[in-house]
Image 1 (cartoon, rainbow, N blue to C red):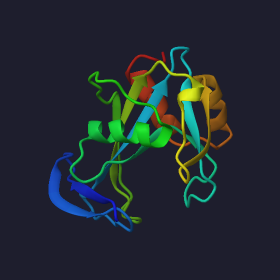
Image 2: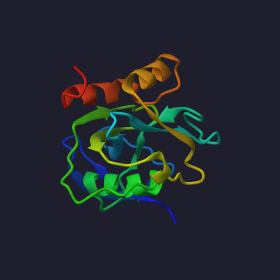
Image 3: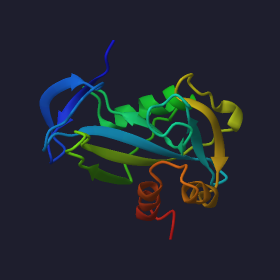
Image 4: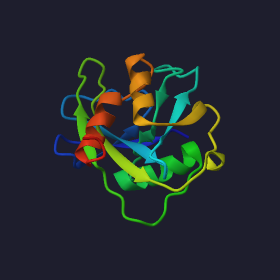
Length: 173
């Protein structure tokens, strides 16, 4: 079954248009919505995953949990779905809200989107993490300095935006 997505306007409002995510080419003023979850353990380390080697984009690179918001979902619904799906961790009932958001416009590729970044602090152990086949091949708990080193090596996705999110919520000075 194809995953369907809502199309948003420049004010981040649903337009009423729902299309298949696969092969979507968005025109000027059309956006989809993604979420990213910076999951931090009680020791101040972040859960990062290594993308599968068969991914068409960023294969083998490190990233944080996240994905596309499906049709009818809110940003919060999506992050509550993506975290258990991708890394097997359950989020509690606490109210979560994005700490940072940004917009990407790539009219040439029809790749226009908004991203909501959540900073989620969880009490978990590495043994609590379970990866989905086809999504990630490895995970680790990394300090922000270790993530910065991966980014300097060119193998970490969304680094600059995640840094901005952690600065916005006061985690990084």
